[in-house]
Image (cartoon, rainbow, N blue to C red; front, side, top):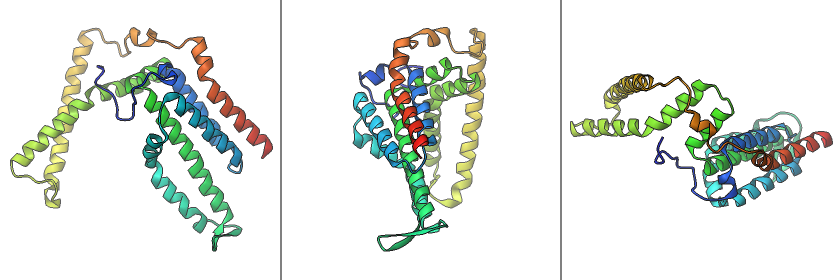
Length: 256
């Protein structure tokens, strides 16, 4: 688990958000997302308040809006689906820019876009301020099932190895006259995928046996769990955003 195993979404910085332990950021993001999802779709003011909270956290984390919005394009397929709802929805119709649109469909489209965008932005902020290793450590401290954290750990550790192996296999195929761009050579490509799977499986078996011989018990080392554990003050600081989000959601439910 060396320092070289980062991810493309992480942004190196020394901001207050970066310095928070990973477990408090994970809990804050989950509670914030739950509050957003629980908000009635007609409480438009609440979503504006959530967007303000996201903007404040992004400013504290020194993550620019351009970076966030460009990565948020991952939700574009859901936005395209939401655009179709006003045309396909049933119920009462309203006229918007000369078009007769379903009122329920408009609310549904707004619900998908608003909640999906806020959830994606919150996840991006978590990824931008927390390394992949720290995310796994945070999940382990939150008592996530060990099978998930261990699989994620091995995937992170050996992802670069598998990518390098796949690249070497591709170069070997091309050097022997294979061109994966053509459809009739799909069989060779599929055989390469199968060979890569077998190599990964065999490598995993060897690594697992080596770890067992060195005292591996199926759990992460204790140093991972004890080093940099969140203090009470850090929990209170990180609770600011989810508490405000929960208050906004509760107010929106009461007023709707």
